[in-house]
Image (cartoon, rainbow, N blue to C red; front, top):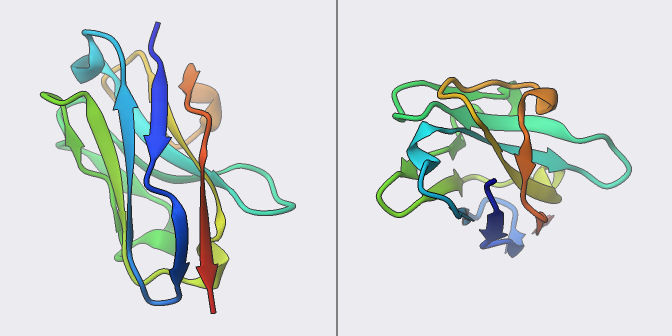
Length: 124
């Protein structure tokens, strides 16, 4: 069982930056593929970024490529999402997710564990 707790959300102006953190419980964090998803207002949850267990493989959704990164620190049981050049359309609830395999995936159905979400609002 893995428990995930996100933090770092908030209100930021367009063009600004935020760093989300996801703290995971459990001794096998380094064996999990991790990802961030988001749910904009009135829309379905969508993939943002994913990272393999070692960090050697990452995947990004097209709208965030070049602006977001997803580093992880296995020693601290944490994964992050660094968000730069934020746009109003990035406004969403952001969720951290974990899957019990080392490979990253972009489908929400591949992830067994989810955090409670953290709100990100970008003002224009």
